[in-house]
Length: 350
Image (cartoon, rainbow, N blue to C red):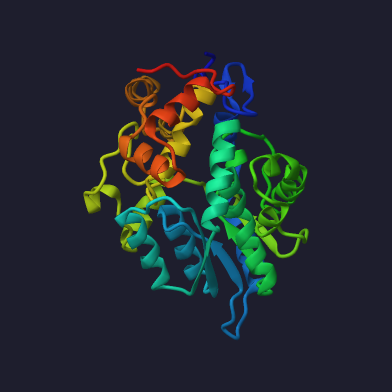
């Protein structure tokens, strides 16, 4: 398998490109040295000033899960004296103590809107996407972007502040932009094109439309990673000063196949969703995190590859159990689907 010679990211990652053996995620990261971050932050300040409301009404929506990036975003909006409404999209998996505590921590700071997808819709959509694509939370990951946008539009809140532009930060494109609207518009179009496919899984057009915006370009949506160099490790430091708890802090879950205790810790079954990239692409979350640490200079290439070889193929037992119990599979049925699926190109039992 071809890998980036700087960080080790595999070429099987969707849309990643290579130049002289270096992946687009690294090339984008190297561009940070040429960016005038102070000027970008001044432009952010001007933008926020334009949307700031002096009457105390909400002037920005912040999509939050409760994680360390959510805490960092809230902290930044505090620094700019904005009046946010926090918006959370829930899945049906069992939430961790840390996840619940972290979300509640943010909810003590600001008002919060929590959207929970209808459980029956969640079951149908997740089973269909898992069995057909190996991309189980396809519907939920749409909703994470579209629901905050819908809430802002409905409540006439002029701005939505997302975290990182994942497509740019992790090598899916070499085009960086401050606004997220064009990507949300692309999601709207894609959701409409997929109506027939969802109906094959007994998910109705009405169920899809519950999370699909019908407006374009209003409100404004931006990525904070355009204005600040994005770093999960740095965000963790800020989050912990605000009361953020890791899995080690609660002592509830020593995850198999993970190299840290603070990324994507909100629910158990979500980790099984992330692991499903291993049979599809030949790597999963551990590779993502390890290669990011190499880019940031926190791990060497060899150190990262050692961690990946030890952990990346492993599916956490608690995550598998929760995924199966919520969706109505036995663990044998789950593994049979993975083993026999047309999208399985890389899985070998280890």
